[in-house]
Image 1: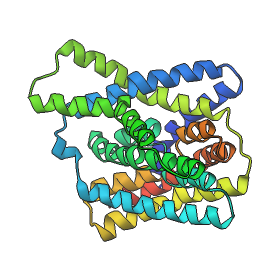
Image 2 (image 1 turned 90 degrees about the vertical axis):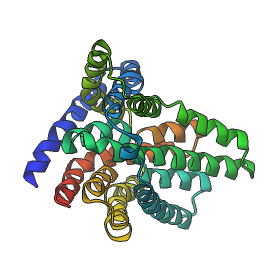
Image 3 (image 1 turned 135 degrees about the vertical axis):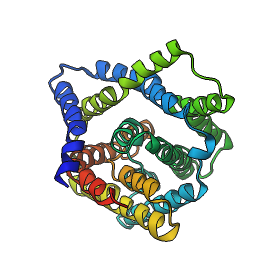
Image 4 (image 1 turned 60 degrees about the vertical axis):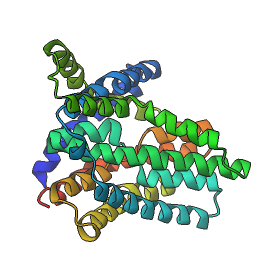
Length: 309
């Protein structure tokens, strides 16, 4: 377990450096926003492009895996929603809390971390999880919030959400890479070198950006933040483990990757969604900060437990 902790420690150390830089204003909010843009539009898509050009669609698409992850996530989503409604919060606030309980930082943190810890073969499973988070839960939070406010759901809103997912640079990079692989054409060396250079920046820049963005987060409503962190860091990976290993009997390697990725902290973009809708933004902020700090220990424990699945 100590060996796993030492492997994951550098990832969290870079996040810590980013947090320190943001907290001291050495790295301003504007600088953080532009670094995040670089990671989102260039570095992470390049990493996905690099790996997906060596993958066939059959290597990525696994319907049993998708269904197992979806069922496990929906179960935890229902649990978090039920607990929120039992506390008599509004539907839109419950939707934000449930989102925090199941949607982890798979894009900025999971992709580079799982690729380095488990190897390039981890990219396919992690991308399938990201697709579920984007398409299913990214749409679900909008449906619940818009529906609770308007009393109905406009097809135009749902169409906009789906289109925004398809235009996501990481999703586009995966599709382009898979399409390029299907042609059987070798990537020209100058293009491959460019992709390698950008991909090499993805891990440190993504982790640093996470830390710098955390500098602006607060830990209000600590009791709720602790509950949501427990959902994301413990209950969610446990549910994924049950679905993958016991129910669907998924292959050991990709099951291990899924469980490890499910143990990552709450995704930072939930705060942006919550803030844009004016629904429990501070609660989301606290859950992101608390879960990230606690995951320094818990993520290493989960990875150590699944290493030999």
